[in-house]
Length: 339
Image (tube, rainbow, N blue to C red):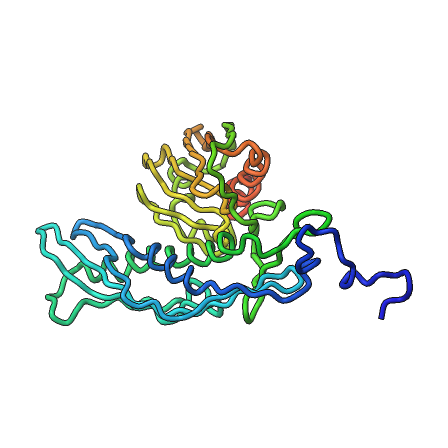
């Protein structure tokens, strides 16, 4: 029991307009099952992949079984979700022949990491064999994995808005946990808290543009490859990453804190991409253009950034300097001369 005159903060009633759940102390729960079912269907439908053999697309989501909920206790958000999914994919060969098959994901759960998902792709029994099945089992499965990773991100950001109630001193900062374990990010893109929820806005936000230059002791070809090769990206970020190093290919790195799409690729010379932090206003991307300039025994990298929210300028500069430039030099030795 608290001593006289020494108020225990658990029982101090702050000045709130609604006088509800002071200090976010009490357990509250929000059912995310219906929202999740709709979100999963929306994310999976339209997932597509294409190569010289033809194209494939997820055309129907026939089973979405499971549940999801979020609990708030003392300002900590705890996520529960478990899903069994089944979808139909349709392939079209270059000759115009149609094929159909299924995709099954039985273990989308807060207990499993994205890379541990079981994604089974099969061709319907009455269909003749086709190379499109292999395409769906490789690139198609990766695109499905990325879509499901987006669901988890949306669940932890978009759906949680309003669960952490403001205190007398302002908005309490939520802490995120899962049902069975608390995952600590191996690296974060900046110290300003990159896991905050995306800002939803219906008006044009003020943006800025800036450029940065850095010199690397390697060839343009080698440096160019660092940004497009998934294994190399995972090496310098020290975290799992998904990188499809083709024009129109998508990327997600630093535990989902950064993602985007490659929009233009000129081998060994230029990379242009849509790029964003996960807590930027929804659907807002900056345009990042990287130019690789050959300076004899070294490469000068020019990075031009357009459309960065004004409030994010310094954070973005610091993030690129620390988690791209310095990390690449330290990982691959591109910052030291050997005599």
